[in-house]
Amino acid sequence: MDLHQRDLVFLYDDIHTKNSIQEHPYIVISCQDAILHDGFVIVVMTTSSGMYNDDYSFPLTNEMFVKPLDKENCQARMHIIISVKNSQIAKRSVNKMKLVHFKQLLKQIKQTTLSVDEEE
Image 1 (tube, one colour):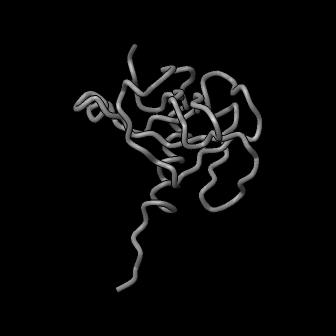
Image 2 (cartoon, helix red, strand yellow):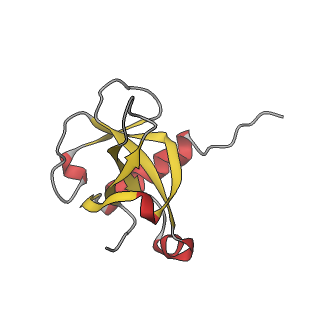
């Protein structure tokens, strides 16, 4: 299966589950050249737990995706960005984020998570 920037994919995840490995949704943020280069992809975690309402939350709505989301109260957790092997992806491209909203997400990630600390 092909893998592209803006795809909503599921990864095998044992970090955010208590006693088992389950599939967890992430959005691919790597550009296409990076995806093809070494077999790794950079993704940002999403959640629908509703527990978070902070500076690292980016709300995700049905209008931002090609198909409606399966859950309510979805958000990207902008500080949980990981690099994984393509083989760790359980389900590829179950949905795709629209470009205009993806650009907003990347801009917000840069401002909140990847900003420069001005300390000496």
